[in-house]
Length: 626
Image (cartoon, rainbow, N blue to C red; front, side, top):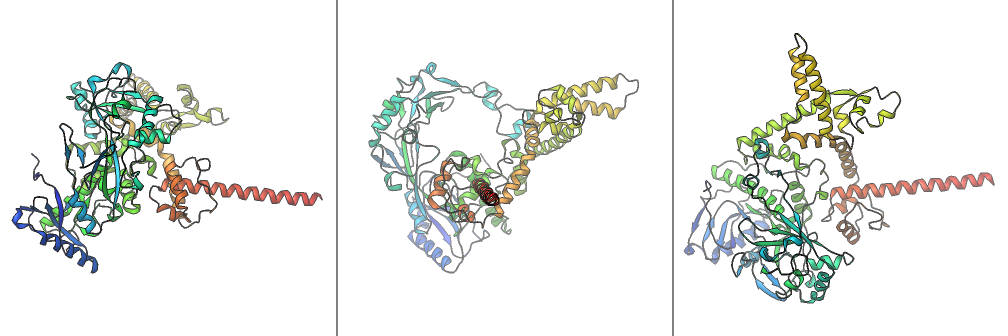
């Protein structure tokens, strides 16, 4: 088992608080579990009184444990609430409503919701809202005609998530064992859409949004897809096997909580699914969430010290979003609890900035703006997305984890040092290798650039780094030229009677391409370098524009702002912000969107000024003629 980990099963119903002990260093006793005789309603009432007193006196109460449904108390220094869809959860299939967090996967029945904790949080003054999500039916893969579906094979070689594996050259386990899974693709059609709309009146009625429910904007049900895009002739569904040792298949994109007798009628209209059998029906779940504006950037609550939240309780949707919050909440809670147990001062918060990672963007959006609909993380939400690439995640974040004391793997640390050194070495190698423009042009189409056609410039020297900046030139193109030149120089040197050892070493290095685990990072860092400068200038313009007023006659339409998303245009039109600062406070409006808005409006202003000057000049010219 894992050192210092003890797993308990129970339903948390209430919180235990201590008055005026906030700040992360509260002198709690050792965590323990006490029986029913130690718990009682006096704990609950004392907790609420502590919170109310702390609020009146401007002090934060501190968490000291939880009360379970069976009466046990679990005392601890930090609590992280990760209720997912269980907080006040209600499951829906058609018009049927069942209290629960989710259906059991391998057997009949549902997992019960966390209703007591929902009441507790509401009584403690946390602002709660209601969101919904849905999951498609699970179908029997043996009843699918796979030949009528389009294969979607796994990428081989399969790039691992772990930079540790990339550095050591290890394959992902399933690839190494030869057990990679092939998904398939199918598509809805006119008959599907006809049934989806025909039975729409049988869909659930929700608690939120006037009975419509507030679901994920970017992961809509099949009904929402057909309703929003009536002109589409089909919507793709990916058939995803649920594992190596099961016949269950997940028809991604086909969530829709129709009555159980209607669901097979809809699914059987898709190619390959004419005889499909449903093992578990599709359903929706509506649940409570806490407005994340109640949290700090560590995901600790503002009102109760030591109480953290992560996942769907914070208004997000998606596994990756939940996992990302779990890392930050877990790291901060663990570090604070550890410091308290040792009698150390509270540690500095472990917080990622918007320029450090998508986790930083996600949490900053949530805690500064809140959300009124399930939040998903997209690259478009990040103003620094050119820097936040998959290829450089370890270079951005591994050292932060080491400094925070949450990463101790020596191989990861060695891999980081090697990658940093490899990037420096690779960049210097590209910067130091030069050929005249005409020679570059002779090695490949477009490698000479516009200078080839410019009189007096085709004899200039260009570095490999400068050539790689060109849009159609790849690192592989440049490496081939460098390797060829290195081998030529090496051959010439070795033909000499007494070759210079340093020159031989330089030629060998020139002939050797960049290490495989550095390739993507080296290419991207060079390619994006000049765009990163422009990105920073755009952000500086945005920061300076915060107090500027937005013209009141702006019409937020796609034709006027083609780079803004439908969500952004809808929210700008709904709230009609007066200044850019006002717009920045709207949930769903990102700094990148504001940069685009500022640039578009500025261009419009310059065009109007130019037209006005030309008109005035025309009047003066006409007056002179008269």
